[in-house]
Length: 446
Ligand SMILES: Nc1ncnc2c1ncn2[C@@H]1O[C@H](COP(=O)(O)OP(=O)(O)OP(=O)(O)O)[C@@H](O)[C@H]1O
Ligand SMILES: [Mg+2]
Image (cartoon, rainbow, N blue to C red; front, top):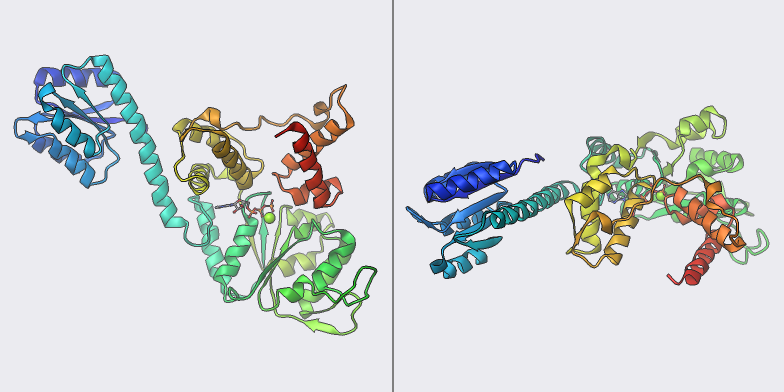
């Protein structure tokens, strides 16, 4: 989108037209004059203007015709009407046609300049929103995945192609890049769409319970196993099993996974008969799996089993184009009437987004809740400064509870606000973390 602002000046008084054109050119606008309705219409049809200043009384007709044409073409052109005192009624008609404002002649030059500047700003905003909406309409449909990034579009095409196959898919990407969204899109576009999509977060399950969660258990298999319970492999029968954070599973569980994926059958914990399932596996990880394999932390055979097709999602900072699009779409889903000012969009685009799309979502949610304004400015969108090293956060005189909260928050931030992962990193279960955060919030009175 070019930053040039194009202004059409429709004025038949040659002296006034020249003054206006000179002044506006002096402000860096690209100005086109027109002295007749006919030539104004020709220009409006030939190119798009940001602002049109339209005199109403013209030798070959009324400026209203120009406004009508702009309205009919749904152009993102803001119109300012110039009128003599006698024509106020017509000016009101012009406002009904969507004119931005009107000025009665003789108007002061500064007044005109300020008005043109405001109208140009509004036009720019509108153009940006229209462009975003058009892109949204083109790309939002496939699977709720919003993007206009060429690399991501290729990924969408890949999803479309592999969805109908039975190939296992491994989705790699940083936290919050949309791995689960991709997994769900694969399911939705696959012949298994009518059957369940079952997700298990391998990182959030306690080590001792992983096996039972995956394969289920028989009654009495261990203390607390009061009834027979199916595992996710059984629940996902005929559907898709999503193994989230698969890079986190222990070598013992890796071996078991491999066996099930090869044989399509397994024992429930404490069971003596095998259970057979028909599932397709989609897995995700925020680790570089090739490195995990190279460094001996992940079985190579399992890696190949899971990654029939590997999809690598780029981090948000590598798809700047998507930041504005995602922000506008997410904001309009949160609160339909709010818009982002160009400055706010620039600020969002410049940020590094360590937590990727999830972080963007949280930032917008916060801004939508906290700002009373419809047009969100850069100040309405506080972004975390680059985080200081953890040790610096602890100061002398802090209570143990404060240190704990500080640390929890930093770990949470490191994991893009993902509680399951933060809990895992902290070695507590997600519920404990949840309670601790709740308690901290209550104390701070937020
Ligand atoms: N391209 C996108 N379009 C729309 N929403 C998106 C997009 N990418 C991510 N999101 C949204 O961002 C949030 C995070 O996405 P998701 O849970 O799929 O990420 P993830 O990669 O699985 O993260 P994690 O590694 O932390 O589990 C979700 O609310 C998701 O709907
Ligand atoms: Mg996820």
